[in-house]
Length: 190
Image 1 (cartoon, rainbow, N blue to C red):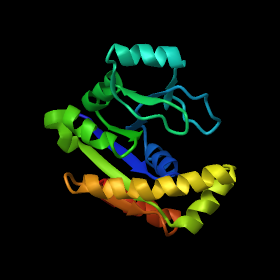
Image 2 (cartoon, rainbow, N blue to C red; image 1 turned 30 degrees about the horizontal axis):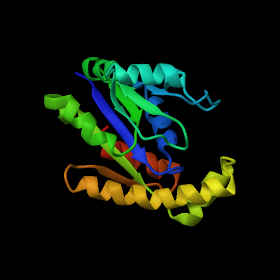
Image 3 (cartoon, helix red, strand yellow; image 1 turned 45 degrees about the vertical axis):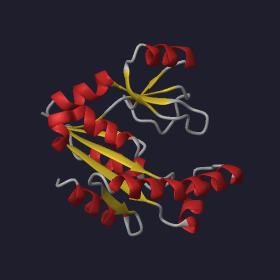
Image 4 (cartoon, rainbow, N blue to C red; image 1 turned 90 degrees about the horizontal axis):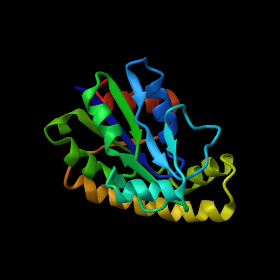
């Protein structure tokens, strides 16, 4: 039986950095493929996304192939195929996924008796100044940065609400990368 580490958090919080770190720990760590309608990006990992046209995405959604589909994020559709989660739950090793926090309850419910093998991590916002700098370094537009900062406040509040019903490991990415990774590994019991 496999372990799933789900990573959630606000834009620019370090989700990709943490996923990359975990995936670098050895071959027993793998990414869980997610589906999206967006175009590939240079920083995407191999096997991270199944890139679908909007029509193909909708077809699979109608056929109930997805465990979840998130509301469009910045105009892009994302979804997690049931088949991808099944593979992660049944294979040995650790599977890593980056998801929105609202998907964690769905994942735990779907995992059923194997929910104990799902570790939910949420990376809190670092504050507006730090977040603005990180998003600027990603070359996001000033309008997108303002929009995402407002969304971050909302995402942190939603994570707090979900945490009232289930246990989430909260991380703060405010120190060095080594401190962040050590805190994450401790939260994952690695």
